[in-house]
Image (cartoon, rainbow, N blue to C red; front, top):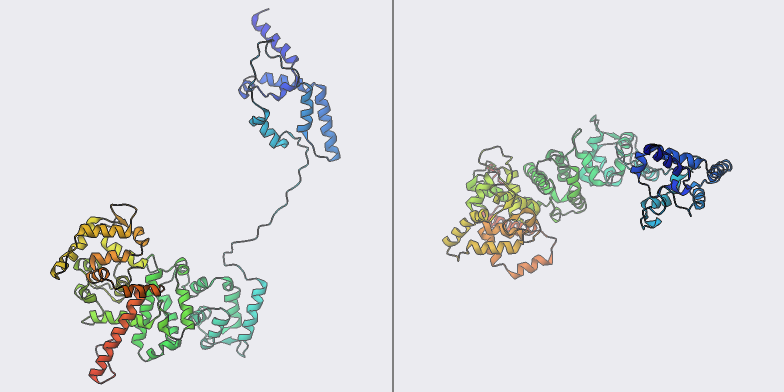
Length: 545
């Protein structure tokens, strides 16, 4: 008998005497089984021929017939106990390698079997169907529909207000609906009326209002979204300055604190423009003139509208609508615009604040580094450009102001302020100190003071985020290009500091506008006394007051 034939016979004899425990194959590698498919078939045939296997299959069939839970793993374990005392004879006696000293609990194979016994279960096992959980709808393309109770309450108010022979309301009667049903500031009344009256019939019927407000799901929107939807033009996803004009017209026509302006339409227009410019300066952070819903929600315009709707004294509404604030801005512009062409050039702006600004910073402003001019006249800024400049100059603690001046000082536009850039602007300040016989402060000392004040993340430059994280950031810009405010900061009055701390809700702009309005009012009173007349402006020159 050849050696090859003898090896085959030995292998068959070994297979014939295999123990059932071997069929679990705990110590046989997958590679050995893959390379010996005949061995696997022989092992399976041997397992099927065992009496214990027959008992197992019969037990599983009986369990399936009566509908009881099939646990093949437990039955298989009972079968395996039979041959657990004998070792497989795959190797000659005494030549078998030792088994690995691992416990069954540490084996990934055994852990998998214990954690999921159904893996060895019969396909006949009855699996209970899981209960389906219905997730309520949370996204509505056209807004969340109102609840039945809310809808009934709203319809009850609508039926009460639209109870008239015409079954509709004219624009002067619609304000009650805006306030009581929509819960919106009354200044949105005309805009809402025209939004519903698309055919310009002059009447909004009950059915038309219900279709827009209730069926259109406006009822469940927040007040910022409602305002945005009322003001925006069809097909647009943003608001422009023109969209706010109906609100300002309604404000000027109905607010008791602005009644005195009704005889001067020109100043009504200027007031409306100034308010809109201030709104976009603070809320339109992208600076592109397109006010988005996100920006409107993040701003405080809605709260200011509600405040103006409740407060009879418009000057107490400091955010956007104060007439005194408009008066200060417009008078400052009129003082600088000597030829009254409604434009300001470099020489005009250099006189701002009693020549407080340096030539270099004025040149940067007119290079349109912080903001592109809207005047469309070469070398001149218009009224809107001046509003942005003045708000930035008189309140350097606000984020729009910090962004404005940061762009001015950032000469190369790389997003950081380096010592060289700051020195470029401070050189003119140093020269002015010497000319005014003041003790000059060297730039090295100023640089140390600035970095100690801001505490930037890096020691070699300052970022915009560094400035926004410090309450004293505005003083950095005053040091670099506004000598008057720099000197005032160095010799600041403790009484003024204490006064600022007493009312932290007031901004630097609020305090400046209040002081300046008092000064302008006193000058006007002196002029009235000297002229002996209450007429304080020449209408031919179109002066403001």
